[in-house]
Length: 180
Image 1 (tube, rainbow, N blue to C red):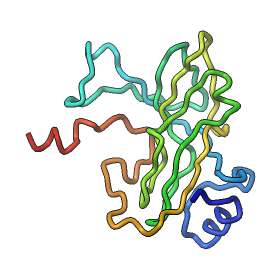
Image 2: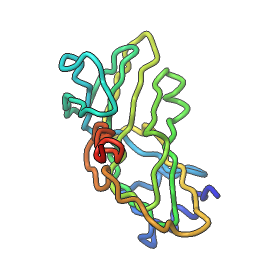
Image 3: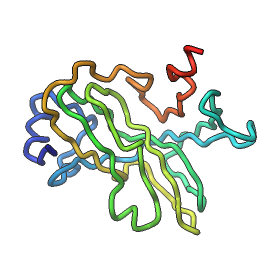
């Protein structure tokens, strides 16, 4: 069940759901808008000819209050907000419609597990033929929060727990690679 604006406000007030920094205007009828942070990662395309699921990927770090995403380019970014979900809530990250209509696709693999704590790494793709300029602090995506039927038996404790900046793929740390 997706929770409403009233429930979101109540959970934040009780300290059960953490969203920091928080402003009331971020709450929408069935979601919370999140703002763009200042940390970005761009895949270092000059280091490798191909990426695999087995090898660490090199990224160039960028820290800026503004960034331009060239046409047909991919970039990782982070939210300004740090979130912590309790063990009985999960969330979906969705792009804002107004931004999607500009040709900017926003993902985070779409899912935030119960028990996750940290800033959310966003996957940005400019599907347009024009560059898109972004500024930190602007609402970039929305967090749709859903109540689970019960607390997770094993809340999230994965490799992205506690992230405070944009974090590149750690697929190379997957169990399939480590247990070879």
